[in-house]
Length: 103
View 1: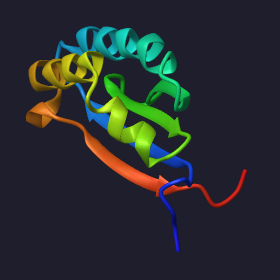
View 2: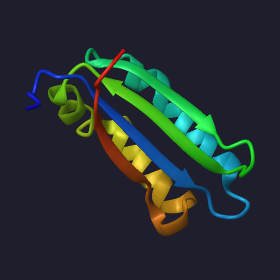
View 3: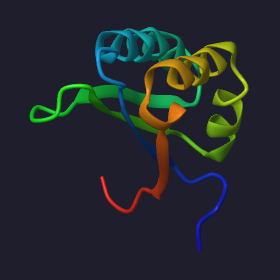
């Protein structure tokens, strides 16, 4: 039903450890310009929960699965994984993959 040339949306959620929200925010913000420079990334936006400071959602939109595959091989992605290990609850984020159904 879905092909490898279909757009892919990733929603990444992470909650910072107590007192580490600024560190987590900074790590995500450093990731954004480098990710947007990738050819297959069309959107890369960071959001913070208004009611739960330190809970972050990263909305990422890729032109295709190949773009996702390339993204996870970059140095800046590896650095973000290291930051999550230090600053996020559970040492990692939760990532959900979505198919784009409408614009």
